[in-house]
Image 1 (spheres, rainbow, N blue to C red):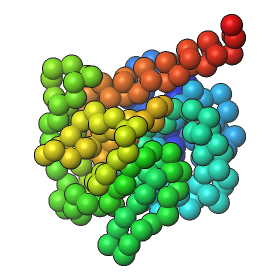
Image 2: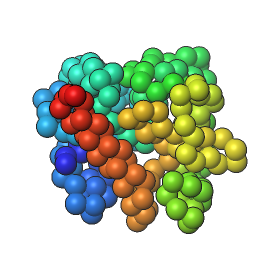
Image 3: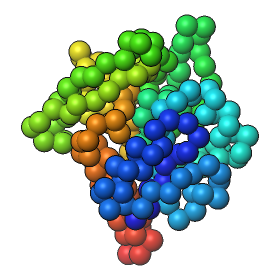
Image 4: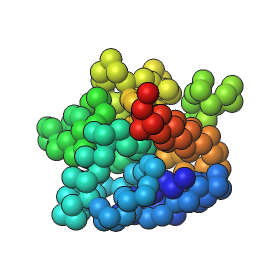
Length: 204
């Protein structure tokens, strides 16, 4: 199984290291052709508008959007969550919805500036009884979500880890700790997607 990591901005090396520790090949993705042969993709943090524009210029945005609509698994962290969101709000009003695959409304940088970064422990029942230690850096906040979105983890009653179908998104950076559980959870989603596709292609 190969899960790519979008290599435009953010903690590309850290995400790749976590996947490789799980025994998963994790090539870097910068162009549409780099999606070929991948079973899933992780989109790291960074500046969402810059990442979106660069993806659009290379054709990667359209190529990835088509795959997402076909059920391709993607995990977006921080800016990656913003890129997946259907609706994005900010201080100057709405921002572009780049991939629009996840039925959430997010506010950019809602957890504060870089100097206000912090760590927290959040419970995630699907990952076991031990809370997950996570890092928030200029993190987006989920303002609302549709009925098809499942909240996996919350901070002070607000969603910070959500999923919908094959998509997973978090406001925080799991790659900045040694805990592999969220990456393993996404890898399991990718495997399930592969199995479902295999069954569908086999027919009755």
